[in-house]
Length: 184
Image (cartoon, rainbow, N blue to C red; front, side):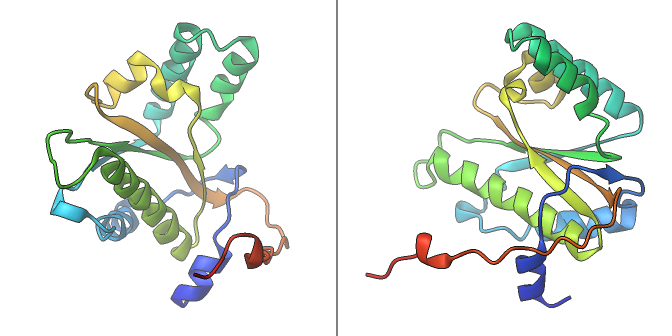
C-alpha cells in the first residue's frame, strides 16, 4: 500500500476481533510510532500493550474510574464491554517534562498524539483495523497508577486494535476540503 492510500483509507472501526498484531508486527508498529516529529528529542510518550488477562484488568480499572469519577450507571455498563471490544489495546501516555523550556508541554502532548496516530497507521498498513478512544475514565486514579502516570502525564489514547469483525464495503468518504482549508 502506498503512503497516500494508507493515509486516505484509514478509518475507525469499533467492531474488532482476533487476531491482533503479533510480536514482530508490534515491533514494526512501535518503530513507526517512534518516527513521530519530536522537538528536542524528548520521546514524550510511553506505550502499554494490554491483551489477554490484561483486558480483564483494564475492565476493572475502567469500572473503578466510573465509580471514582461518578460517571453514572450507563458508563459503568459501557466500561464492562469496552475493554473487550478488541483483542489488543495500546495505551499511549504523554510523558510530559514541564521543566524543558524550549519544548512547551502542549507540544509534548501533540507529539504523543502523533505517536498514537503513527501506531494507527502502521497497524492499518499491516491489515489491522483500530479505533482511538479516550473518555473521562482516563482520569481514573487506579488506571493512571496502573499505567505508571505521574501527575503531569496524560493518557492520550486507548487504541483498540484487531481484525475487522465484519467485512464491509463501506467506502472512505471524500471530505470537502474547502471547509477545512484556507490560503493566506
